[in-house]
Image 1 (cartoon, helix red, strand yellow):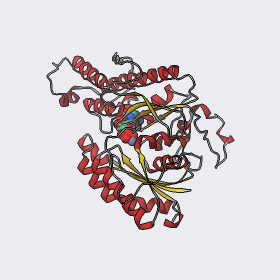
Image 2: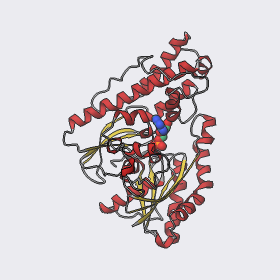
Image 3: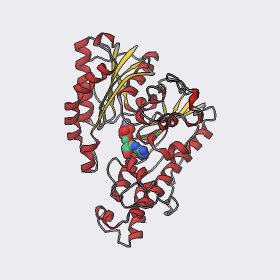
Image 4: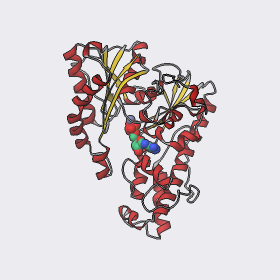
Amino acid sequence: MKILGIETSCDETAAAVVEDGVRILSNVVVSQIDIFAEYGGVIPEVAARSHLEAMMPVVKKALLDASCTWNDIDAIAVTHAPGLLGSLLIGTLTARTLAILHNKPLYAVHHLKSHVYANWLEVTKSKAESSSDTLKAVRPSLWSSDDSALDSSSNLFATPNFPLLALVVSGGHTQILYMPGHNKFEIIGTTHDDAIGECFDKVAKILGLPYPGGPSITRAARGEIEGATRPGDSDKYKLPHPKVEGLDFSFSGLKTAVLRAVQKELGVPISYPSHKLKELLSAEQVCDFAASFQKTAVEILVEKLEMAKREYPETKSVVIAGGVSANQALREALPEAYFPATFLSGDNGAMVAAACYFEILSGVNPVNPYKLNIYPRISIQD
Ligand code: KG4
Ligand code: ZN
């Protein structure tokens, strides 16, 4: 079964064709990062307009790359929730129109389910975009140092086993989900305030690093920014772990702790305009703050995941999902967990098609293309 997946929940316009939920035939992502790097964050109206311009060329390229015509497509899947209202509207209106025009069943997929199902997508040696680093990132513990043992079509893939725990770490969400089986989700931990990706983005802004904050913080932690002569020292600044009960998270305190630590280091009062702090920081200080923050953020995630494993001892696999799953420090801290290939960590259409396939297997019905609604804030459990 070939499914066309369409994703526009935030600032990526994406479409992909996936066969049987696991084989990526094409995966086209047009990112608006360059536009928003200038503003330091996403501007919803601009995002929607950019989706509108990119959407149809992206869909056409996804079909072309997969060597598919509309006759080959069995279903269309689209993100209808959660996300930015205008962005979701462009994707769903496109999918609805295409479903009616080409007489295809239409499925509405929750964005966080898609991120989780990115872990079911196969990455074969011939498909993996670039270096062996991409492959190692897929499943470090499965990686053999003798890569000659893998022929050009070998599949490094082993699918996660149920029951599993999914740690969702994206720009808008931080949750631990318990999954007893396909398409069954129970939220067992969630953030009380900021999401982890949002925290990376806000800390990057304080440090004067470009949006999106995740990759910028990693580069700075490695000392890969202008003027830096060494990697950041991750033990330089002691940042607190939030005291949150059970499996829940809180990240707004960590962001404020970085802000206070920067103010203290620079000897300025807390009333000092935060957008001017970056002008006073040296490259080395930026690297040290980035490394210290990243280390603390990873420690907090790992701690809660370990706690969840103790509370759910029947857990057979742990999967990590969402944009922050691209983080190398997090990957290294969780060598036994499943991570999507780094190019599938962020928003893409392949994961939407994968999630849709497993929904269909679980008995989920198509939606009415004349009536499909969007839900910018709905939970994965609703
Ligand atoms: O899942 P995603 O692409 O979009 C949402 O559904 O929100 O996640 C975007 C988030 C951003 O906050 C971005 O800073 C973060 O993922 N991110 C990272 C990395 N790459 C992207 N965070 C930490 N390390 C990274 N390498
Ligand atoms: Zn996402």
